[in-house]
Length: 76
Image 1 (spheres, helix red, strand yellow):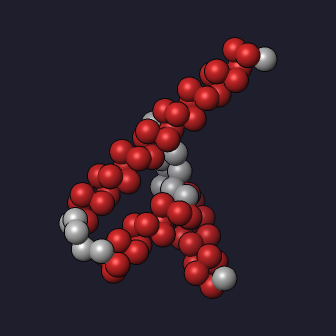
Image 2 (tube, helix red, strand yellow):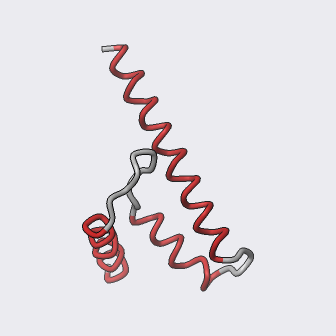
């Protein structure tokens, strides 16, 4: 429970301090957890690779979300 509180506070702080580009979804608790745990649990890739992967993943999710909303709007 303490870990989830930590992730929630980090996420809220991130949203308050940084405006996100339109092509990215905001950081989620799960994404913060992955970025936080990656250097500790597995050291298969360097930090730059993990941050690039996170950026790609969030951009892809934003594109999917936009497509989903457009499809829902045309069906209604």
